[in-house]
Length: 341
Image (cartoon, rainbow, N blue to C red; front, side, top):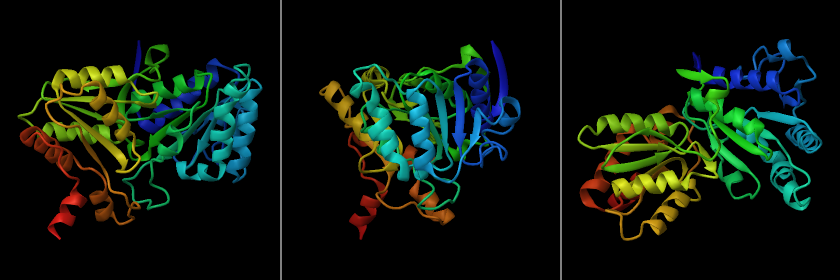
């Protein structure tokens, strides 16, 4: 087993390097990914090692280069497309959701599309309403797409390598607020993280907290604040398909579930988790399922307002404690403030 200590963005870089090295069909495509090494330096130096035919700079035309990648994937290559900010895929969604996600079905399984779209996502760095969203809901409702979310260096490396090897299109969301975090990780084949499998971050007996992405360290900090509560933390890692068995088993053991999501209250993946667990464990839960999310509002640019918008460790701890002590799902903070007014 080979271990190293890298920042999250370096773990992405290492995963790309290892897949480029091991499979000649892998190519990278995107804006400023070659000579500039990517705006977040997640492809730094790769063009020097593998050349401009495999690390390809593109014009500012997401529709064009994503369309080219879909065609390349359908005809034998394994393209990895970088979206500098995940919002930029909006002008090219047709290529992903109507074309790439449907080729296997429309061809009766004769054409697969081993395409990866990876992009920086999420709030916390003051990029404002148009550059701070997760936008997983743009992808989750499209049959044929897999979706995963990075939460640390290990799954930044391992999920990306799994995604590149998958025969179908995969979206990998990388919370950019985590890029600078330095952590231990296992590299090589042993470091690969399977798609569709959750990770139990911490075991506990009083409540299960399911989360993903940048909310994982937030929930870990919240659990540390709740010294009298035994909190089990589950990192989904993959949103589509998500690991129903691990989540249901954990919640059956603790009897309570809190789902913490970086995303709006309406339409979030936490709704899917809450609905499924409530159905599977109806009558066995000790309290209703509680959801902790962001409000249905644009993400503020102001630092203090952005911090208010995102679930904090203190807020997660407070909501979880209220669920345990009252046996009722607490209202979100904005609903509480409306009641007061």
